[in-house]
Structure formats: structure tokens, C-alpha cells
Image 1 (spheres, helix red, strand yellow):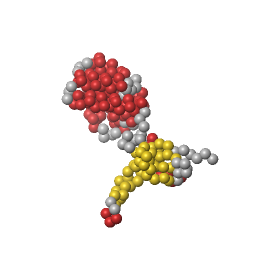
Image 2 (cartoon, rainbow, N blue to C red; image 1 turned 90 degrees about the vertical axis):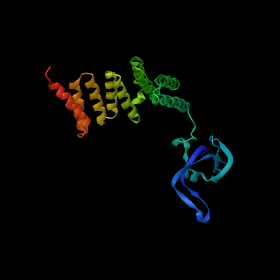
Image 3 (cartoon, one colour; image 1 turned 60 degrees about the horizontal axis):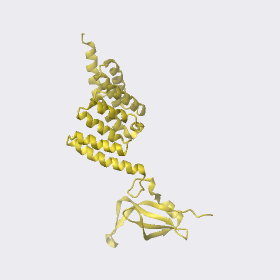
Image 4 (cartoon, rainbow, N blue to C red; image 1 turned 180 degrees about the vertical axis):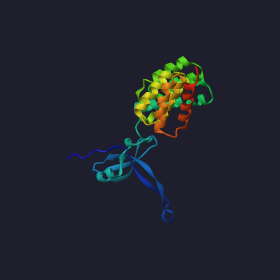
Length: 253
């Protein structure tokens, strides 16, 4: 029978011992300890210390039977760590994130032209980066460049991953910026897609209602407010807006 070959970076999670003799103690917080593992001619697995860049040294820390290795260690690719080999997508994402961080600093200083440029550079590196498109659109809005903001937001709306549940805070923020830019139809479309992902989020119905109300469609807005209050009966902001719209509806023309 062919012996299973092990080769690559693996880790085990364990509590670290520190000190010696009477001063010896075990830290309560477990740590992930990484090694380069490879099968040796005896059929055991050698555990080699790693260099800071993740490449193996020639120093064998321990040699253990294959069954023990499988019981103790997991492949490094199963969790996030600095030693995990980076894919081309990872590298693109990291490069884009660096430019986004620069852009965000410009936004904080109200340097919107510089921010729009840096967000644009991030998009060139990673065209599917949601935060870059959203940030660029926000910068254009701050500059009063509504047409450019709309163009950027329309491109963002074609990126399917914006509506992944993990990006909930982003598609919420996206809708708010669309409404702020008076792009009501796009804002409402965004929230409708978001509701398909999370139909029990009262804030999404409330945000649709706000967009409809600001767009002069109070009757439609009340339907969404009722749904928001059905999900969350103590939703005070929804109650207040509902009251404003219904009072307006009873005012003499």
C-alpha cells in the first residue's frame, strides 16, 4: 500500500507553556502553532520550523507517526493566517485595500478629489471591489458630481456579490447613498434585492419607505412602513414617518 504523502504548512491549536520548574505555567489562551510538515523515509511526519516568510527551515522540531499527525494537525488552508499561500485574487484584494485605506484618509480630511482618484485606482486593480465602487460614488456625491456618482453606483449594482449576506452593511450603506443622491429608483431597486436576501430586516423596509416618501410616493411608502412595524412593533422611526405621511395625506389640497 502506498504511504500517504504529507507536504505543506500545517498547524495545531494548543496552550503554551512558559517558564521552568516552579515558575512554569500554562497560558489560558490557545495559540495556533505552524510548522512545515513532510513525510520522511520512515513513514513518519517531520515538523520543521518556519521562517518569517513561511518557507521551511532545515530544523526538525519533531517527527511523529502519521496517525498522530492527523489527530493533532490541520492544513493551514483551512483558516486565515499569514502563512497561507496567497492566490492572485488575494494579491489583487490586498493591493486594492491599500489604495482604499489611502482614499478613506482623504475622505476624512474632505479631500474628495484625491479620494475619488484613489478609489478609482483601487477599482483598476480589483474591478469587483465593492468598497472601492461605493467609496468612489460617495466622493463624487460630496463633490456634487451626481452624474459621475450615478455612473459609479450603476456599475456597483452589477456586482452580484454586493448582495451576499456578509455584505449586508455595504448594501445598506449603498442604498443610503443612492437616496442621498436622489437616485430613488436605483435605491429602491437595491433595497428590494436586499430584502430577497434578508426579508426579516425591518430597516430595509423603512429605507424603501424613506426613498418612496422623498420621491413623492407616500401611499406606497406607508405599505413598507406597515411591514417594518409588523416585524418590529416598537420601531419608533417608522411610526414617526408613518404619522407624517398619513397627516400629509389628510391635509386639504
